[in-house]
Every structure is written in structure tokens, then in C-alpha cells.
Length: 301
Image (cartoon, rainbow, N blue to C red; front, side):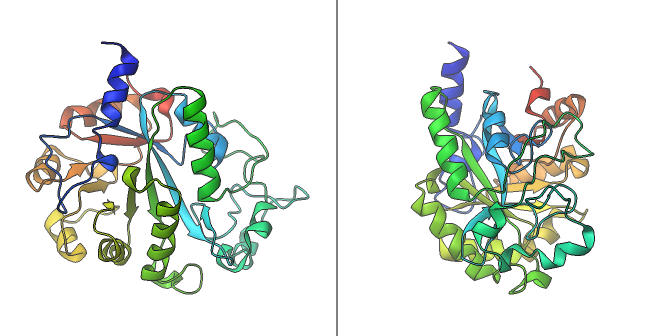
């Protein structure tokens, strides 16, 4: 069987595209491995931009595109890790870098998309990602990303990817930098449905309020619970209030016991963000169901 055919078959099976009838997945029926391109291919191209997502698609092992979304003043779903213009990567139209002291005044929730698109968030590169190709590029809308990705896949006979969309919300940001959780979830879910990708989309968040809102609004949408700090899985799930299809911890937290515990509860376990091939191989041996990485070129072959 050809490599491409195997990949085509795997696309039909892996996590974010599977539609569970309940809140949990039968892990015995989902056997494919889910390689996710973090913010596209952040190690190789400017994060959360159309070129970054298209770069990730060059690697046939990548089955899911992971991305972050915030909301603009004119209610556009914008692909961005922060709800502001980051001083780490963004510049004004004249090329002058955004300063740390200016971030609060460059609140995306208080900017129209036309204002957002005037900023260049790729020409400066990224100090932590020396392999990243620099280019002048703006933060895109979710619509622009999906349209470019679907077009690329059609033109290149590539299996269409899943989308793992992180809703960036925190209690201290409510109504100031982002909509409150339910309103935020409503806007994002509406756009996902409008773009026709609901069957291939997973919504993830660190914020349990957001995941609860997504589940209440549309229980057919797959959700993933992002976990950053060490706490017992039982404690985290009790706070969330339900068992999600996917448990997504920081990769340094993963142990064989955690993987076994997740699988016993019907959850897939997909750690983030794993950038060294040796660490990827070690996690695969532990039995994880997927890996989120900035470097799809480092996926073991």
C-alpha cells in the first residue's frame, strides 16, 4: 500500500476529525497518530500565518494544524496567540518594532481587522526559532487560513487537514481583551460552521469555562483540555466537569501512568509542544496518540 494511500486512510480516523456520540472516544477504534503543526510550522515560518500553515502541509505526516484565535473589534476571528500585538515579533507599517510598553494600547479586541492587518508580524523573525524564515506577513483571519489551506490541498492532491483551534481566554481578559467565554465560543463556533470545517475541527483551551461553554453550545464539537501545571488528572477533570475526548498536557508532564489513566477514561493524549526528535520518540514509546510540534521537519521517519 502506498504511503499516500495510508495517509489518506489515516485522515479518516484521527482524533480531531472523529465524531464521538458521547464525550469520550473509543481509543481502540482510533489507531492513527496525530501529528500537529504548532501555530503552523513555527520553527520554520512566522507563527500563526498563512505561510506557516502552508509550510506545515508540505510534510505529509502532519494531520492537524494547531492555531490560536482571538476576536477583533469588528468581530472577526483573528489567528493570533495573544490578544495584542506582540513586541516579540510585530512591527508597525513603517517597520519600527512594537515596544513592550505599547502592547496594552495595541489590544486586538479594540482594533478593527483593517488596523490589525497593517502590522507586520514576520519580518523580524523570532529569537527562539533561528530556522524560521523571515517575511513580511500580517495576522490572518481564520477564514483566510481555511481558504488558503483548502485551496492548497486541492491543488496539490493532499489530504485536507484537521484544525485544532485554541480559544485564548483568561478570566482577567474577559470583556477587556476578549469576549467572555460563552460569547467567545459562540463567535468561534459560528465561524467554524460557516467555513464548513466543523467535522474536522477540535476546540482546545486552558480555560475550563471556555470548554464548558463550547460543550453546552454544541456537544458534537470535539474538545481538548490543555494542561500546563502538574496536578492529578482526577483534579483537572473534576474542575472541567466532564471527560473530554482529548487530554493535552505539557509534554514534560507525560508519564506512562498518565497515558494509561487517560486511555482508561476513553481519552486520547496529545502533548505539546515537542521539538526534539528524541523526545518525540520517547513519547511515542509511552503510548501518546499524537504530538504537537513547531518543527514538522523533525518528525521521526
